[in-house]
Amino acid sequence: MTKALLIDIKRCIGCRSCQVACKRWYGLPGEKTSLSPSWTNPPTMTAYTWSRVRFVELDGENGDFKWRFVKEQCMHCLDPACASACFVGALHKTEEGPVDYDYTRCVGCRYCMIACPFGVPKLQWDRSRPYIQKCVMCVERVREGMKPACASACPTGAIMFGEREELLKEARKRIAQGGYVNHIYGEKEAGGTSVLYISDVPFEKLGFPKVSEQPYPKLTAASLEKIPFVVPALAAGLVALWLYSERREKIQALKEKGGGK
Image 1 (cartoon, rainbow, N blue to C red):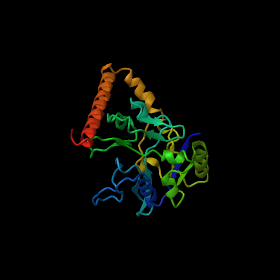
Image 2: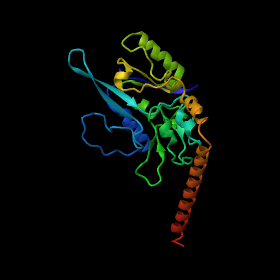
Image 3: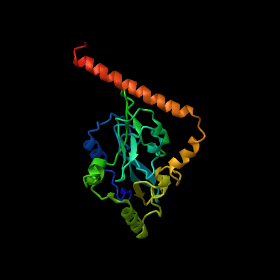
Image 4: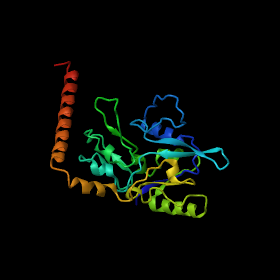
């Protein structure tokens, strides 16, 4: 069965333990940021920040304000548009639930960045040979029967990990008890995702994107039928360019190892 995360925004205290745990597990560097009007830090997800907590300031009932904290990461769609757009199979949906990434296959075309309705995949813009980076839901931990690092680090139980169907039951149970919006974000969005949210505040007020309930690969497939043969030819050209670049790097490495001979 498909594993998933259930994020209860009402329980999140904005401690960023999940954000730190992700960086520590994958050895991701801290990022230099500057002072801004927002408490969200870093301001966006990047190739080196796969998960972050977004601080949302809302108007209160008595003229004051209240905070809500939104954990963001890859949504791990059941039918991922990124994987559908990747013509070399660098991105793929695993049996366990996470959408995994194989950098050895990536040619840097960035089609996945365009295809993702949530804007998740990021490129290493600071490198001469960049790769796409994103949350993979700690797939190596999941395969060993462990929780993702973020879920293990959460001190309030705001992040639950388990079978997707069981988490949907838990989400419906909490909603039925009151105090929550009657909406499980991710149950149907983009055809369903392996990251689910419940909240006491409407999701549109928290800045969640409004996306189609239809899986995006079905939408893109209809469009691709109208695209001329030049696009597959372009894809083949990108692969050839990547193979050439790979061969040049190997030759250069051999020359350096042999003292420039």
